[in-house]
Image (cartoon, rainbow, N blue to C red):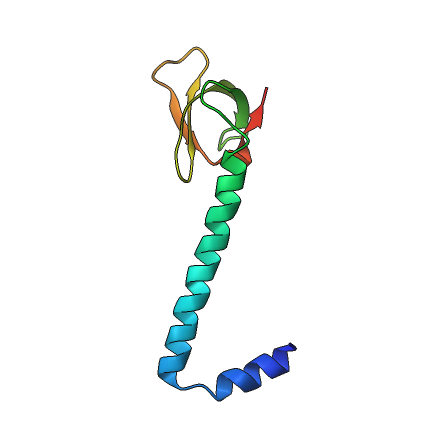
Amino acid sequence: MTRLEIETALNKLTREELVALNKAIVKRVKLMDDLKRMAANANFEVHDRVAWRDQEGDYRTGHILRINTKTISVEEDGDPEGIWRIPASHLRKL
């Protein structure tokens, strides 16, 4: 479907139909994001050794304590109080 065809179809919808369509689209996008996160999280297990770069670009290492829905909790090496919550997409196994 071309962009023009989509715009033509949207112009025929009522406000209520557009709101319903919007809700369905947002729900679908969230589902796609959740599936992507779950696939990324599946690459890791508790106790895996991992590395990442922090906000300043410094290289850090640690081990996984917990795999959460959106992030992975990692204890930094040498700092038992240094718990980081990092998206799986920013981690790599060592």
